[in-house]
Image (cartoon, rainbow, N blue to C red; front, side, top):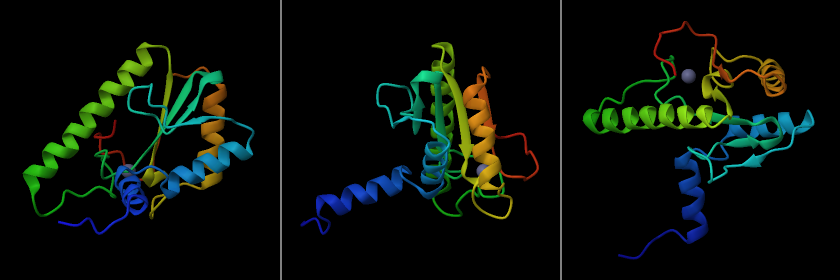
Length: 158
Ligand SMILES: [Zn+2]
């Protein structure tokens, strides 16, 4: 059967599906750049292909969609159909995320996770607060940072 998409359209679709170059990620990139930080994008050599890598600070940043990465927040809902498929898929993603973070930390990288709900939806934080917190963390020696929306902690987030 003929493929209706040319390869450019297809790679754009794949990028949307994979979650790269999503709006929250662009906001983080622009905001950090404006604050003078320089970074590499989607470094394939590192576990989990972090969205931003700041070698000078030994820091990586993941900008995670709450659905794909199984965040325990109000933006996450199990789909009503194909439940077994989604359970396996999302659980697999969460386990892989946890493994990648462990590997990065044990090789001396510092790891920040910015959840989509920190930048989108009714519980979002102000973008300035998110960027300032991230900037301070980059310059600190802290190994781990997780930024999410103002929802109640359900105890499920990584
Ligand atoms: Zn979330």
